[in-house]
Image 1: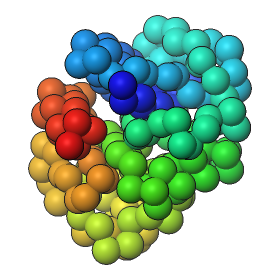
Image 2 (image 1 turned 180 degrees about the vertical axis):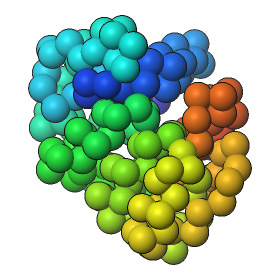
Image 3 (image 1 turned 30 degrees about the horizontal axis):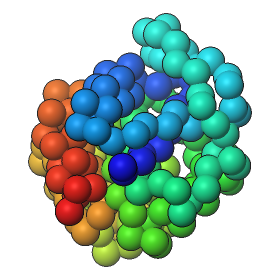
Length: 169
């Protein structure tokens, strides 16, 4: 069974966490909720709670097949934690699925994995992604190897389809 980590922190975008979490489970993929702290309840932008299963420090990279970075304002918080940034970088280096939507691209930039990659994201972080070395395109979803990016909640259906497709090979 494939296993994916979804990163959370306060002010996460609810749809960008819950839609992939539920769709992946429906597809038979195990999902683990990862936050800066284990067992902490994080509140979304609209107040909806989610509790982390483990902290990023506890994640065994060899036991996961991918990492999803939802948007909202949580990515700006997540990238302040070296263990989160390292988890994303190592997952990418090991050719595991690394998927980011909306402002999630901020974590990709902090992980320094965007050089020469083609990505998308929320239009307000276009400059950040380009300054990190990526080629930005305005598209519903962009797949560049095992790196998968999308722009906004409306793109979630295709974003998750591509995540599942890459995970299942």
